[in-house]
Image (cartoon, rainbow, N blue to C red; front, side, top):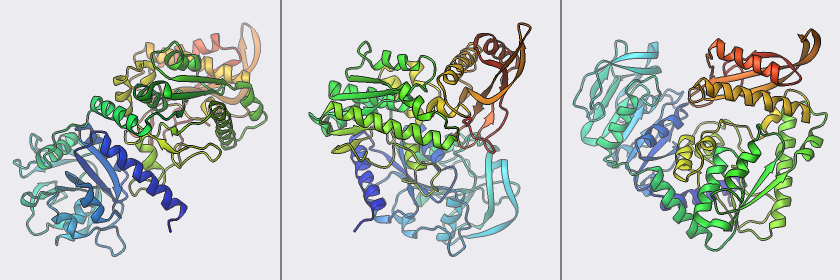
Length: 538
């Protein structure tokens, strides 16, 4: 009998299969995850080639892989040494299926080790941008790749001897086998990481593999995804009713747009305004999805600001605030759901990184739990969950939103935490503090946009510190709060660097905040990277 966790995983897997069959995923490339930190990047790069890709653990049974009938398989990197007895491995049958296989870093070493090559500990670790010389320019993987080319290396072990049937196709000054291939068997091993941006022509190499080797045509497009998803949702829902918790963020907004196009007013969206949104954000969401918007659905806005402020009174611990905000949202949502009456399906804006980070895809450790991954609310009776964006990365979600006609300013809205401004206010949350941070944040965002930096910075916002200090304004002593400005550049939001905003922009933001926002007399700019800090300011 299944454990509860196994049952949840099996249930979610069955739903994923439903959508895979129904949403134009005729060409599937599988990424087998061996614990590499770049597993999501590998899948994203394949998707950028308009080829659908999913991540699975290396523990996935060979029979399941056969049943999925992938066009290609990619083995990720990992932290282990493939020649040690307890290291992750895979049966050599994988390389005899006639399906093209591309091994990256650890995946390349494992391929050599399993097939009779030799992998050894290197005397010197090769790390960072490295000049790679292409030995076999006729290789299908290296078509139109320059030689030398700059690639990202990160390995302690190296391939000392290629497996029988393989030839070396690239090398570096310190690495005799930077790439090897058995063209006849469609097996390719690459020691470096083509998936990271530091590899100058990495995307070209991955495109070469999925197109030239796997023979994929590339039919994974957002217009086709939207069309086929609409058909799949209509088939699943029939004449049933669907309930969606609409936060106003990108994911839930695109889910609402997609469901609306599929089933119209069979969809009810409950928008809980907890009073912790950015300035005017609640009205902006209502303008798009409310009665005056362009989407056919039932829109319920719950103005629960005072309810939240009372719950948060006297609370300063950030994790406690998160729990209060999350639990209160569930209570409000359940109350509104009961008012609606019988509802057949619960819809969620779950996206693919949520699934992977929650430990339900691949082999990487749980990065963080997500509120929208894990099952149905206890106190509301639904037949099933619908997660139309479950297979999409964030950039794909944005593309789908544009296809649906959702306004660009909403589709490209800055990331915003579920607890909202509640965690961007250090210490106790009050209506006064919320007003201060809303106004400061609006000024900051406006000036960043005016400077043409809004598309270059991945996340930026104003937060309110709990520090009060003496100042002078209009020849009078003040004792007011300090606002902290945060702006980061990142690829995956797991690591980040502070953005280098021109001083004149920061100075203008500072001047406007101090002059226009009552209760503030200092403005700081946070230079901290992640790690050691977090992107959020709590």
